[in-house]
Image 1 (tube, rainbow, N blue to C red):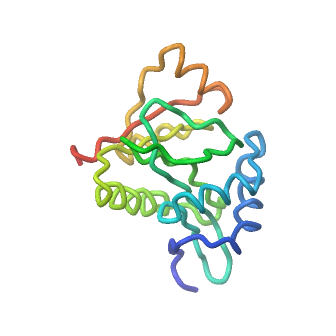
Image 2 (image 1 turned 90 degrees about the horizontal axis):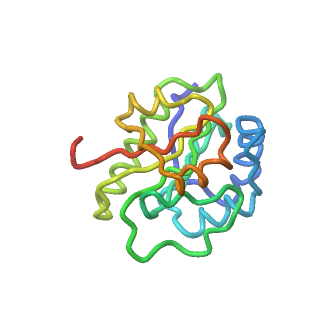
Length: 168
């Protein structure tokens, strides 16, 4: 069996992406149309993890503004004119396919960000994944009241994190 690898996501991948999202994020549901919009707005940041002949994960990222967390299951409508970060909306991988694949996706989006003149990656860590993100170069940001309010929909313990690409 070939090693799992990331490839660009296609509209035909939406059923698999939605099924993985439902399995990995049962408490943070998002509609397929929301995923489809991200793919339409910024296809370069949307990838699927292919293992053999199945999709075993997905990653979704798009240009955004630092400290502005997109609400879950809501349409972005458009990307900001002057983005100062590439926001990693989600990386979800089936449990039996984990092990280094998140690093590969993050490396890819870091290259994408640099090529776009963006020097920062941003994300919200959920489900106590903060140590994983710290290993990948992200650091937690102290949340003020406004940021705390935006994090609330991501569940208890959600942490906003940034990675400075200029320093890596």
